[in-house]
Image 1: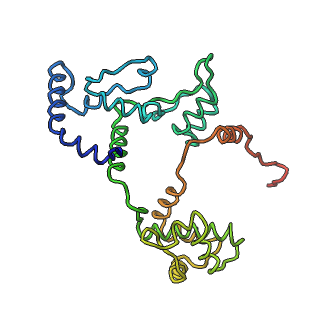
Image 2: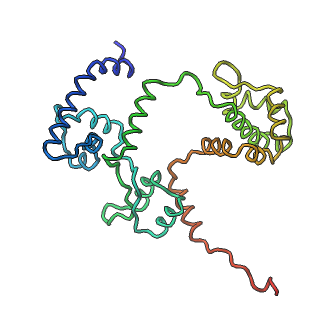
Length: 279
């Protein structure tokens, strides 16, 4: 028998929503009587999921009010993420954190690179805080996206689509056409070479590409040359930077990348030679 989908299980569980709501409401009233804050936001998410509990082999009883939340967070591994700040005794790492060249996405790589079992920790990324509202909002977002998955390729705004196309045309001009524009070859690359083919091969979930569309782009940004991105940025700066961020999502740096950043940081700044200047 096939396993039920997440949507099916959620629909079935929603029948218990009213009963569960009353249980949480009664539990909150009991906490208020015991002296806890009256505002439910202050205590509703006080769920003991942190990794340190698992490290101490703390077991959560099935009857525990937060059992299913804790189990879900642990199965997803969210309690092991480093979402808070990064503390370090290493001056190079501290400088790169201050420059925002590194952040908490790099915490695990930094810990692996600098920490040893028999020495005090040089780098420590903070675990999720159970009172962090953004943590709970993100968890809710994950479940909502799983419950209502997109159908086909999500459609962007028309302007964003056109700016994405300009980025793709710039890549094709540099990497496939060696800087010499050829409309027919550009269209051929857009419809046959990954990752462009998935975006422009046509069909209900694709943007499609044609000479007419390229002509509209050309009327907007001018000729297809090494200045097309700059002109697209000047024409619509806000939309351009949104697309640029979308295409360059930051992920955790590798150990090699971190070492390269440290090496760059340690290079002395170039000093002008006074002999080259005269008053």
